[in-house]
Amino acid sequence: MALINLLDFDLDGLAAYCEGLGEKRFRATQLFRWIHQKGAADFGAMTDLAKSLRDKLAGVAEVRPLPVAAEQASADGTIKWLFDVGGGNAVEAVFIPEDDRGTLCVSSQAGCAVGCRFCSTGHQGFSRNLTTGEILAQLWYAEHHLRARLKLAPGERAITNVVMMGMGEPLQNYGALVPALKVMLDDHGYGLSRRRVTVSTSGVVPMMDRLREDCPVALAVSLHAPNDALRDDLVPLNKKYPLAELMAACMRYLEAAPRDFITFEYCMLDGVNDSDEHARQLLALVHGRGEHRVPCKLNLIPFNPFPESGLLRSPRARVLAFAKILQDAGIVTTVRKTRGDDIDAACGQLAGEVQDRTRAAERMKRLPVRVVAAPADARHKPH
Ligand code: SAH
Ligand code: SF4
Image 1 (tube, rainbow, N blue to C red):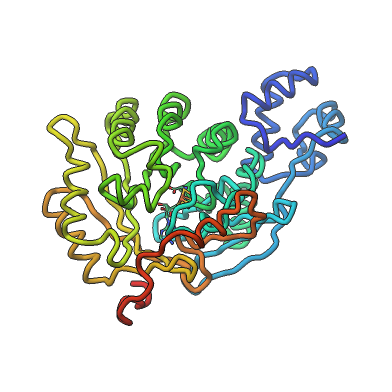
Image 2: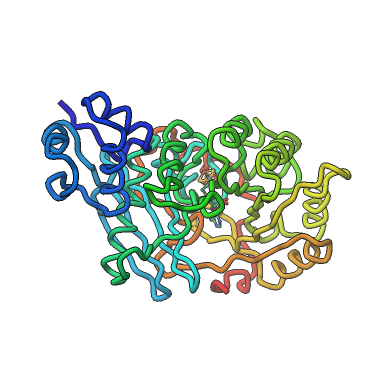
């Protein structure tokens, strides 16, 4: 019989499981703390846990890590891990250290079915959803591995922020996502505040509404285009949930958290979505009409090129001119620094290894490619 993976449970789930074994909730809390706060996988090492519970767990349950298939460390401190999720699939997680924080970028699926033109994961197609345990195994491993590697003092955390911006569309794996988020937020788990856990979505409108009810963490919305015609082309999900619906869903999301804001992500593609006119359209979109103004920040992402995309990064001067139009209109606009570029760990470069069950790669090849060549200066290095 397959062992139960205890990483699959949030605290309520673990309490229910332990209850089934005839154990009280406080025992489940102890077990949960051993797993997530102390990084223990061996029941024998959980010294203050009743021997009776340890004996019951042995042979029926386990804390199942993901095998690390590869690790790459960048000169800037960024670390990328490739985790083997079986069946020829692998997913990636990236640790990005900064002065005042440590961010882990976590994957939610092996591949992605949305198929955005500018995204390396999208070009790979979709293989399968990760389980809650596989989502959490990335955080569990990274946190406890880094504490030892960085020689952190007891009680010190390596990871202060989690962003669901690795491979996959988290809101297309909703059932597994929510318990994982709950463990991240739980004081007995990773104890991260709601604002330090970000779900990034290409705009799965009904699931944005559910997330607002179930677990209203910080929300990033991948916009990438200011009108439906262009967004249909870049983010195919737009055909199902066009911009007007997406913006209305953003407003509803913020009703649950009035002091929050949405982070709009916008990947700057040379000659595709980066003109002054696009900036003005974007402004009109987020400003809406009067009371429909969406409280937001805008994050411009320099496109991380990969050959199959046929797309190029907007020149730095273009990005700054685009940003200025928005800043002058009072929108907080930042240009994302690319990190871990030497190890292909930046946004949208995560490819892992995926058995494409959707034949996305073939479909993408048939797509008309608009931009095939650009002046040499558009191929400059990250800023
Ligand atoms: N599926 C989710 C989360 C994963 S992608 C989403 O789309 O939001 C995380 C972020 O990386 C998204 O904003 C995505 O649009 C961006 N991205 C994808 N490919 C990129 C690329 N090649 N260069 C820069 N950013 C990219
Ligand atoms: Fe999927 Fe996000 Fe990549 Fe689009 S950008 S293909 S939604 S992972």
